[in-house]
Image 1: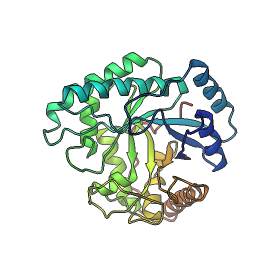
Image 2: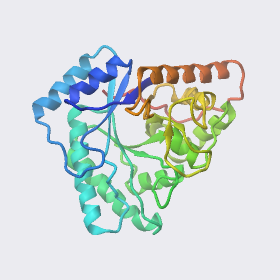
Image 3: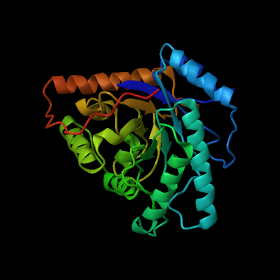
Image 4: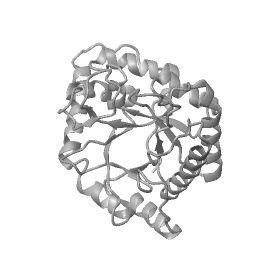
Length: 306
C-alpha cells in the first residue's frame, strides 16, 4: 500500500511534489483550485506538462490525486447552483487530467432532505458530461460521507446507486474515507469487522472501483454523523482499528492519503510514519491469527495510474 498526504500547492504545483517528497509521501493529493471558491485556477499547458514529467521522475512520489472543490453540489435542485457545480467539476477534472492524476476525489453534494431518488438522474448527467468533456483517463472518485443531513454517499448502497445511474461508467470509482465511515456508524475495529466492511463494499460498489483511501482518525465517536478529522492515534478510532482495515489483503495494492490536521497546517512526516505503523499493526494482527473471513472475489484496486 502506498502512503501519502494532502499537500499544499502554494507557490506552484511542483511545490506540492517537493513538500510531499520532503515528508516521505509516496502519493500526494492537491486541490486544483481554492477548496472553497468557484473561480478556477488557470494553468498553461506547459505548466501541467512540467508537473507530469516531474512526478514521473520523482524518486518517491509515485502518484498524484486531486480533490475537487467543496462547493460543488450535484444533488441540488437549485438550477444556478447546479450549473455552477457542473462547470466547476469540469474545470477541476480538466486540470486533474492535465496533471496525469490517478483520480479526482469528489463530494457529490446534498439533496437537503429531498431524497436520493429524485436527484440521481441529474448527478449522473453531470458526471457523464464532465467525463465526456475532459476525455482522457482520469477517473472521478465519489467519496463516502459522514452521514450528516442529505449528503449523498452516506452508505455503500448510495454510492452504488450513483454509479448505476451513470451506467457504471469505467471512469467512475469511489474514495473511502475512514473517518467518514466511522462517523456514519460503520465499525471496522478488528479483522472480522474489517472483513465484513470490505465484503459489503465488494457486494455493493465492487472492490475494483476503490480508487483510494482517505486515512483519518476521528474527533467524534462511532455514529456521530459529523465530519471531524483527527491525527492518527489521537482520535476515537485509534491505530489498531485503522490498521485492521488497512491491513485487509484486498486493499494492499491501493493508496492511503492522510487529511489530518497535524499541528494545524496539515499532515507531517511523523503522521506518515504513524500511518505506516498502523498498517504494520494491521498486517501483524492478521498474521497472528485474528479472524479474517473469506476475501472478496472482485479484482483488487489497481496500482496508481501516475
